[in-house]
Image (cartoon, rainbow, N blue to C red):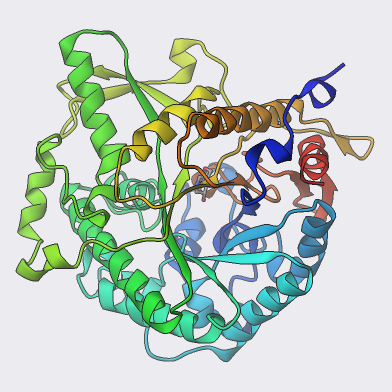
Length: 450
Ligand code: IFM
């Protein structure tokens, strides 16, 4: 007997108001990269450059969600999924990032929103999931302070056009990931490197998060407004003082740097001294504009990291010991499968008094799925989801604040620098034919949600 039959999990244990859903992002699913007046984004440009994405993959078509959204919405309905998180592509709405609005882009998202509502599925919009307009990148992108007003103007257009039907809004997705990978390490778009780019981007993205949230609040007074952070449970490799200190610095970087200013606590400069360099970019009035009273915070947790001191590593003096080196079970992303991480992260973020409500807006796993006789038996993903849900249940039973769970992701999709080989979907996609096949995990989720 497998775990589906064995699982003690039952949706009712989470309570009637607990939110269930799936998450996606525009660039990862839509394709149609230049359809109907869409402008070019930093990811369109990055993916066209040689050697940036594994196996030379690109997202010109991706999951073709732009054309086949109705089919995917029908599949969501079939799986009993009540909430759908998707992002808006800035360059469909404003092809050059500012000024002119592309009516075809507005029409496209209106069709999605209307179709979701007609299917009884609640739309959850993420306003920015990493695809900055390329024409703004040529002006410095997020390293340019003007990015704050570019972003708020774009947010205003979205709020004005979609706010009559969309209640749930997330401003920015995982700022630590796209600034770290895109502006410090250069492994994601726009491929910039260095501490100066990173710190400028960090500060402007934080200001933009608040500015965007205020725009939505003004234009859609009844909106449920959140923003999402990636977070990871951090453990020191040993109990030596050096490793403990190193783990604290990594924890500050990965878990605290972006959320604390938003909660009115300022940047955690005392625990990560390199953040003091931010003072070069913080203008006097900024400190009053960094925080916002969000209705909810989205947390996105996939794994834990084990950290050792490494004083030669600049700025952080620490190194992550990979799952492979630790010889522990991991996913296709090389991330350790460690469900208690979710419980630890919930406990940690529950300590912030300023968080009203926590929703897990992403959690999921990439495993090497195979389609055989029209079926995908992805039992590892089913177990991954079940085991993480057990941790959420434990957290709720311990009185912790956690009020929703969104699986990453509905379908297999374009996993950034990893291309299409890292499959996260509840639904398998054959990228040659765009054929969808509901995986075992999707069937389990359907059953669970029924
Ligand atoms: O695919 C990404 C998503 O875009 C942001 N959060 C993590 C996912 C898996 O890597």
